[in-house]
Amino acid sequence: MDDRGGAHHLRRYRTLGGLRDHLRPPSRQRGRRFLAGVSGRQRHRHAETTARTRSKGAPRRQVAEGRRTGPRSRRHRPGQERGHRTRRYQTRRGGLPLCRRIRSHRGVDAGRETRIRHRLLWLHHQTGRDDRARGSHRREDLLRQDRPTRRGGDDSQSLPEAVVRIGDYLIVLAIALVTIVFIVSLIRHESIPETLQFALVLIVAAIPAALPAVLSITMAVGATALAQREAIVSRLVAIEEMAGVDVLCSDKTGTITENKLTLADVAPFEGFGEDDVLLAALLGSREEDQDPIDIAIIESEKAQSLKERLSSYTVTRFKPFDPVVKRTEATVRDSDGREFSVAKGAPQVILALAGGGRDLGAAVDSLSRAFAEKGYRMLGVARSDTPGTWTYAGVLGLHDPPRDDSAATIRTAAEMGLDVKMVTGDHVAIAREVAREVNLRTDIATADAFVDEPDPEAAEIVEKAAGFAEVFPEHKYRIVSLLQSRGHIVGMTGDGVNDAPALKKADVGIAVAGATDAAKSAAAIVLTKPGLSVIIDAIKESRMIFERMSHYVTYRIAETIRVLFFITLSILLFGFFPITALMIVLLALLNDIPIMTIAWDNVLYSRAPER
Image (cartoon, rainbow, N blue to C red):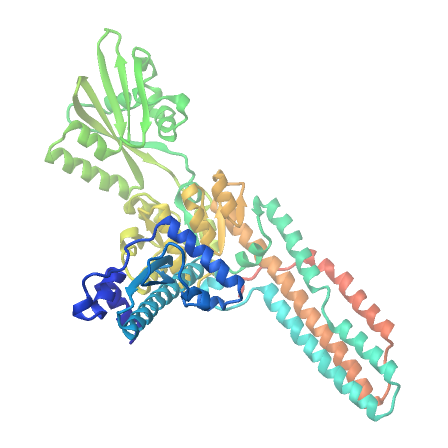
């Protein structure tokens, strides 16, 4: 019977007693049943019996399966009724130990009792094996998900791993050539101790012992150079990984844009003018909170002309921005002593507060699309002259302009074979407008386009998209995973606590300037200066470091092969040792020590990602 049969019986017979009664003859199904549970006293007695049995040298497997392990188990135990015998079992079901007690009269068929016992043990064994198998597969899946991938999930090796393998090949080559030299020396009846000494020294000299040291020094010097470019490396391996990045997922706000909002437009509704809307927004803002939106409104050029009018109002109560209600509210008293309230916040929240009808909702939606096409964020403003009654005054358009160097930096990144994908939580229309301004493609995908799709289709969507809008931090992890499944080496920027999983998952996690401690600890590189140009400069420097390491590895391999073949051919063809053992050691040292200066070598960075 297969495993499914065992699972079927366990589902059909909820208790062990039900299965036992099923296997019993009908005449004996009534009367004797399994105990539903075991008391603490019985468990204690069972533990004492198990320990006593093991101390007598009984096989552990017999104790685990509950078999009788000696003559003592057949004796009458104190407190047990005459005419009964007790058999104890210790099995596993679903990973939890179970203890059951079978009590039967002497008259019960012994063969049927044996079959019951074997059947129960088999079912529990199969269930435990299934659970263990499912648990091992589950653990393996979790380990496979959390295991860091190299080269976007493919099997290519990092440079240090490749160097170690190259060193192994050089050692094998040296041993093979030395073996040939040793055999030839034996045939020529040359001195065995001298030949053996020379062979051992040659093998040691052939090992690229300085290779790890030179690579570490090169990366350490490169990390210092990156720090001078406002990029702090948290682990040296990230330098080589950054040199191979071919997809960079960059945040829009603060990296591509300046993260400095400015008031771009004011759109009043019926019954209000631009000054009325802006005045209500100013009364609902507070400079000491240092909120970016409040600062943008207060420092705008249009607000400067309202300073005199603003001085005649007094704010008696102020409610700062609440992320739950998504609005700011203030109670104001004018020079005549009349009180009214103002509120500003998300357009749809203000619309619900004002209780607008269908026409007002359509107007808000139309303005939202128009502002988004210009790259503006929209902010709603409302006023209440009567408690509980609000009127939608108008909306404000806030603009976060791109950095001056963003367009040129993205153009340089494209020339380096780097695909920059913009990631933002803003509306898709805003993302497209910003992408157009910085010379990115405008085919921006929303999170809904790939979240519910299977991995193959979602990976294709993510790979073809130029950016992603309306994205939450948890979507970044999926974006990185899908890009890695397509063989890309992914760099991901982030600054918040929720960005930490995506930064850890990415081949190169980049914590931008002003990031939280959680993001910095998860990232491989921490930036101390805002902007996309810092990231591109760090990638250039990483590629230069990679070039230095590649040059040294190529030189060291060629030098080792040259020495090995030169000495071997000299011995085989001319029958003499061209250099002594001391000369070989000096040659190895004098080659490795000066070459460490390659860490400061002047090289050009590659125009394509390093592989």
